[in-house]
Length: 412
Image 1 (spheres, rainbow, N blue to C red):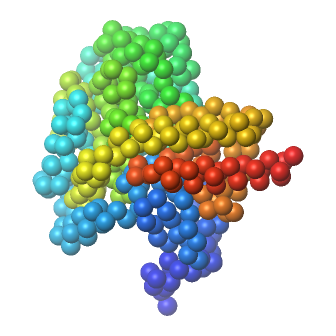
Image 2 (cartoon, rainbow, N blue to C red):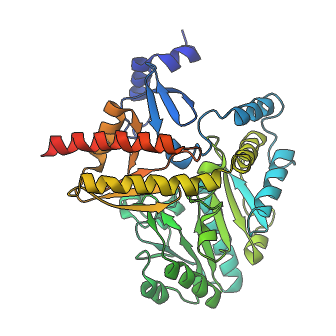
């Protein structure tokens, strides 16, 4: 007999067995099955509570099961889920208008993920470039960047460990050290179609771009008639303390890509463009079956409502500053292990002097009920929901301190 939804949700051992037997081995999972969430907390099949300082990797921006968002999605699910992009739907048109009014862009293409948004940006850059000159197709990205896992976006990603197994890769991509202005100047030429960068490298260790680097990228893109593309899949939608991270640098890119926090847990991506980039696509150039469907765009509209009503962008800025200050205290407690605290708003990385980040993450989850993440062996990443309070920030620091202490004892 086919198991019911309730059986799947509540039987932890059975769910783990189904996963082991039937799901492709693309993830190194922890042995925890989450069954529900509320605000900044998750609950597993046994009812144990966890403080979620990862929010699905910057996805659940307004927390889990926000009442306003839940009502909006229930209403839309009972009204209309999908009709295809051959036809207009009001939630999509409304979201488009709002994103344009809230940013410096002119048009938007909706899709389902950050990788798809970056694919759209790359196609815009290539088509526009070839319209200027056949050889103007080069894409410059940064080493240690991350832009997705499709064949083009994994090639754009400046980390060979993600792409080398899938050769031959598309040509025309080159990579420069992040924040190296001289290297960027040497790389850009008349054949450059676009410079693609993250305002804060996420998978690369929560490394913010320098103002000098971003301004140089803008100047070089203008000089060589190339596009400047900001990948804000992880930084966008209030995460860094401004609605869009580019607003912190005093420049405007030609293209901005979004996903993750835009849908608050529902898959959605967006590629926003201005100027010639906004006018590059014509019917037939690009498309998507599910992108911008009424359900996903209703979710995104609800997220924008909540961000405004609860002033969550300001909360990310203020609570983020408080949390970073509290986390810096860990370096005083563990000077041989904990180093620099980096980031903006509620996008935070903790540098370690020893390669024990993954051990700390595992200890935090399984023994202390704290959900965090590691990027590599020496960076702990925190991406909590934007609703985080100072009290919850204190709780997170306390749990993290206990987790680090356990690992220090184990490794000493």
